[in-house]
Length: 460
Image (cartoon, rainbow, N blue to C red; front, side, top):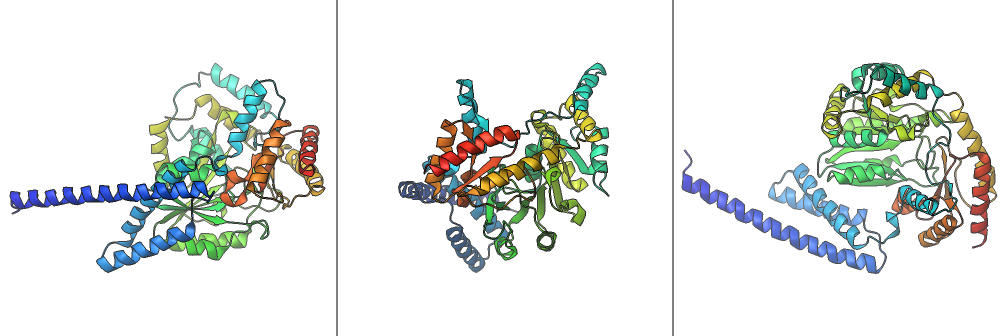
């Protein structure tokens, strides 16, 4: 029998120790803020993997000595490190890595509203329309009264049609989401907890890191390089995996580079993921624009794979906001619960429009973008730029001679001259002297945009 006084005494001790922890956390955050001030003053990058690893090693050794669980230490330390980074970023909010393709898109739209003509080469939004059947399906959905709530994971007919695109997939392994972005977000929320780690291969679409950081998890970055053909280094991935690593995010064909990973490297990565029980989230939004051999992650049979795709690119349905994810029934059930809480379901008429698009696939969209990329390749080769022709997707990722500031000056100069492009810094801090240039305009408009790009480059 527990004596009341003894229990109350222990509770008092817990309260006191908790207070001490809070004071120490506050002291740590104050120090982090001072570090942020110094980094801002000397224009130093916020995140330093080597410093964080040294802190991790120190904490784990201390934990071993006093008998604390290493997994708990890892989660707790990741939470503290993530908060330190947030505070330091607040102190250095004017640094250039705040810029990305959507920042430029919004700035370009503001200039257009003021009457300035802009050539949009900053976003991956096809200029052509969805299949004609999509319009007919919307009208028919209204006439049939198909404008109601649906089950959170999507209408049965659409999920069945999606499952047919992938051998061995059942409809209960499919969830229909409001765009691929929400599929990415709900997959991360379903699989990753606060303080755990997610590995991201960069350059990468910035939404991955945004989603991870939003839930209080920590990102670890594997940088790829132009010199190595954008291939990830397997040993680097292996080195970064820890007991707290919960997910690895892949994106092929890659945004922004257009790279398609080799089957050999992907097989090794999946073997490593299986060995460590890690989820692999594969964003395959650009699979319809693959110009060399591409295999979906679903073809490899790894049970912790989550494949994400969308109707935005292949079917030119960006404004319809509809995508989907495929995974094990367990993870799809968890994602369904999140979607039910957050949005109920995707709009029913939009789901019928997507169903019609699947049944009436456009035959020339990929070829149209490929011709534009071939045209751009010839023009860009004539400029003082470095790049690797894309294996797929709808972008060129090109490097300038010069530093980040010089490249951002070029971005600004181009915008004032009527061309919007995406700064490379938005796809990772190591890519400040890169630009992403989109092929989502007719060749005539692309030519005018590239003429302006060339004139700006050669004037420097």
